[in-house]
Length: 287
Length: 287
Image (cartoon, rainbow over all chains, first blue to last red; front, top):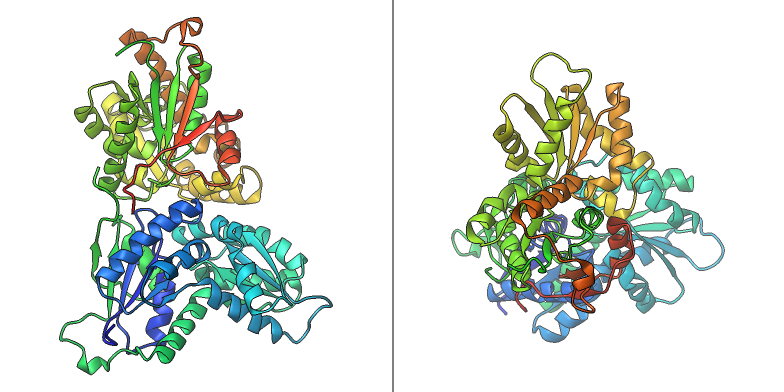
């Protein structure tokens, strides 16, 4: 695989653009192709079989475009289909769950005040991510000293897509999801879905209020970009100096499977910048 | 088409089971095959082209099962793809928008107190339904004396799926969506999505509070079942006496395109009864 090849990033929709945003900041020398399967979003409520089938389709599109590594910017896919992708594909595959779990372990170990008993990590995610048990498994692979409390938070993705990031509705919804985690003793909260970073302020404020103290919020999008940077360093597949790129090669290419009228606004919210030109591709059978 | 043939009902997910519930109550002599394309739910945020492609696939599945009429229990499909389905298919096709629009016109005409100016009909729906302008068009076909105020309410579907039907979060969300409709003078509110009947109490209470008087709530699921009953009577394709059905023919068959672990609870909520045996079918290409 050529070091000049781009990184391939995919997600069920546009939420993974929060990972792209972190990658662009952290890896200025890398090119990125992003695929958002927004014709079939959300994955979080679907069965593991369906998610695996969709993930294979996404991976194939990016591999055809000769990416040098695959970044699964979707906690649901990372939770249920990562082993299958790694077994089947002949390139490095980075998921979103392991980096988030690892960052959470570091954060909980750094807490100044720690209650008696095992340190506890709280995770908010989609129904699919939480039901999969992927975060408890990923944390257990680092150490069995930690306890993981998970809570499905299905309303947070539509809140983000609606752009309701602050105010009474997101606060009340977040409170309802965080209460069992904080009262259960979680010392950190992992944002186990790439949509949630946009609610980071609200989640941080509500968690602090419930706990009576600041609660570190671990952003799995940030953590995933960090892991990608490590892998690139370790694998010696760093991108070329931008000055040597082929003329006109775009820094970021966006592929989507649907192009609704609301695309630009939503994409900009996740990316934190104007969206580049976008191409629509077909991942499902014509019918 | 044999009168003994079942009615075919489809929706992007399980919300259309509210139409099935109304059909079962209204038409005890009819058999029903329901297809919920819950592998690709929601349709409401997708482009018209994608929705049309999905709707064709759903219709084909039901026609292969020899239904005598097609009931599109999905406002989004009814809004953007009904004309295509009617042009392409050789059986009666009932949508959800026209019956809801017609019921709204009747309801607004019956209002005791009517402000000056044209009577106004408020519609809550998905982004797709509202953007399509299908309700204003359907009302204009009945009469141009009415004004239609639409408002997209994307958070209501996930609220229903989460089962948050009462309490502060749905009340605040509903208030935010209803406020511009009520302050704009809407005398009735149409529930322009098959999920919304489960929020009917909350929507009715908030609308009454905002308006300072009861506001009739028009349920498009009820209205669609009513239209189906009319069509069956007109078309002389009423079902056989249940006593003459083939032994073992089920009253209701459920087909879905995905079978997540939460299926039973969600389906029961919409159907208001225990769900019968369910079969999973594949509508998308293997990949």
